[in-house]
Image (cartoon, rainbow, N blue to C red; front, side, top):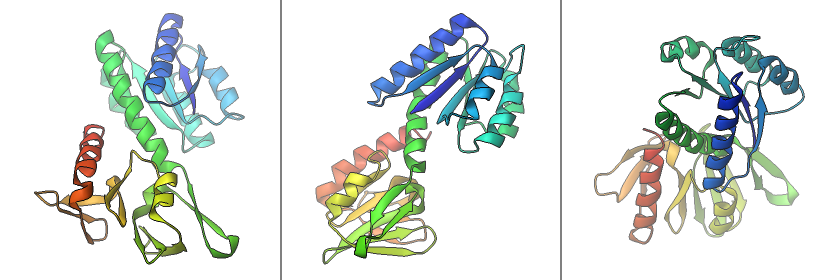
Amino acid sequence: MRIAVCDDELTMLKLISGLVHNEFEKNGEKAVVSAYPKASKLLSDIEEKQFDAVLLDIRMPDTDGFAAAKKIRSLSPETKIIFITTEEALVYDSFDFQPFAFIPKSPPELMRNRLAHTVENLLNALESSRRICIELPYNDKIYIKPDELIYVNSEKNNLFYHLTSGEEIITRDKIQNALEILPDKVFVRIHNRIIVNLNHIENLEYSHTSLTVTGGEELGISRTYKAEFDEAYNNWQKNHT
């Protein structure tokens, strides 16, 4: 993953860049973190480089964070923008740029905790936006975003991919192979024949024996996979509250 950090305070720039790198490592992900003391340099680079996320200080002398965010949005709409600042009152002004998160610089411990939480959420969001490849008959392929997939079920050596569009993709494969291509922080097995997207759970039955997904379909959770589902669902909830 490619991450940019932009802050005119060199001490803060070094601190935040190091924290971001360490948090990605803690989550088992490699990240190339590029540090920029000036927004103008970041903007010149972003025309050639594709960053997954940019952490921007709002108050900077050459180009402020809001002006930089506006340019980033026009050049790279899918890049996640995270604002960092000592002025929390600016959080409302930042909404125009659809920020992924807003991190206060002080107190330091709050900044560290908020950054750690933000990196976890960022990893989940990036996994959900990366396209996955589904192998079709006759050497054909189709690419979809994980968020477009509600659940997968197997039946008689066929896999059925149920999409938010209402479309159903059918391919001859094993459910274990589907598990290998789906982001494990977002998708969880609830039955030996069913994998569900946690982002598309609309209702969870009280005893966790069934759930309802986007579109209103009810799916059963088998006893074999209940503990695995409960752990994954609890982790997912922590990162979405």
